Length: 119
Image (cartoon, helix red, strand yellow):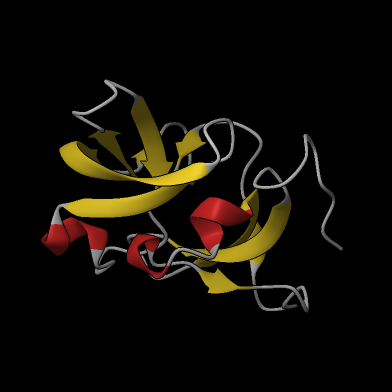
């Protein structure tokens, strides 16, 4: 079930995050990220029974930091898998609901996933 949180562009959905070890996790993230093919998420609206839930602590998903040089806006975007297109294209078009338009962002850095205290 998708629940809007603050109007158009801010709804969330369930998606599959594939960790560096190949484990599938069901995550709830904004649709503007999960539905963007460049970020490498698969839909999990049927709530897969083979996907785990992310641990409550000790785990951070990989992400890219991006910047729009026209506006100066910066974002940290989750990346669903290690072979996501954003990691080779180095730019992404992203809806900015507050501005009511799509902006092109350039990747400024990549941060891998972090595990602390997890086997």
